[in-house]
Image (tube, rainbow, N blue to C red; front, side, top):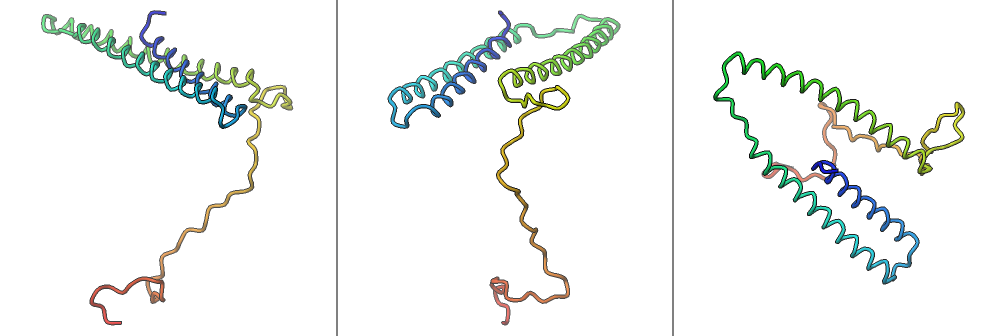
Length: 167
């Protein structure tokens, strides 16, 4: 721990877990339950406090970054070019690492979904697959309204004639 990003992620996780708890409780509790009302109130407080932690963390991070302003005024042309190239290399390395971490995050989320029971364990080839979504019937888009043809007169379409038109 100790990184600003970790504080932000943990705050978001706490808020998300609290929301899951409230959602699960709503399903099982009676609508007029005092405990459910209290839980919802506490959930709002948790969300508010998590938002405060995130805001404070970002504020502190910005204050520290402002102190680390870059001053290149004393550098020679060669030194500036060297710094530029080293920074480009670092950016490319970080982008490659970021892409790898995104792939890893996706795999972790997939595994979490499998372990949480969100996948159909009876897949034919032994690999877990997401459970099919419940079918609610086939949804069709309504037909798109067509513009009247250029040569066809508009029949009474319920439109008012233009102001001053002879009808």
